[in-house]
Image (cartoon, rainbow, N blue to C red; front, side, top):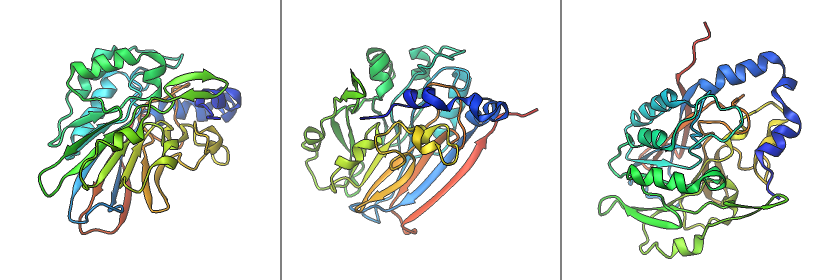
Length: 307
């Protein structure tokens, strides 16, 4: 059974239980920070001489109080400021929690995403909230700003001699069937059939639980969805990750059997507009190059005033 964030957070955590001061910090400070988290690695199947930078935006969840239109503008500025070769957006574009204070129309958040530019393009996938609440509007908004949605599809990118495949899966829990059961629209075998050369491949999939099914053919998998747990209180946070695997794929760089996964903590919020211990982040991933096999760093680029 997949455990949802709503069931867990509303089932017993409660910000009030963590104290008024903690709740104020989580809603009024940490949820409004913005970090850039950087990874540098050369995963298996990726040629060391083939350098590629990727900026990753995940779980925007557009809507106030913590992801209003002005805030989204700052996020896009920060992502564009990384000057990455490729930009990917990993789904869940609009807020669905009950505490929305500023509604951001679909055309508005998509209009901000339209400002993203990269030499190899900007590509998107859909997330479970897009499917559960308004998948048609999300598709229409992204199409209107010419951002391709990769859904069980693959594109070959890069110059001759430095090419790679970018694959995007359909959402793995797109339809709620009840009692913690879901049906996805993902088709990995069909997607892999579109890969017609031996160039390295990167996979985009919203939910990181799918990583258990990813073959060695994929050099790197990129996911969002978990928000890193969103409320990361020591000793209990791992129980609030929306995953059947608990903390296993909750956040960051995961290596299993030589396969590599990076999970973004995302930007927006779900269920409650608060974050604790896992501030909003954009990812910058650098592949290849004459560097150590793995470098990981985090830089805060903006923080709310506490005056």
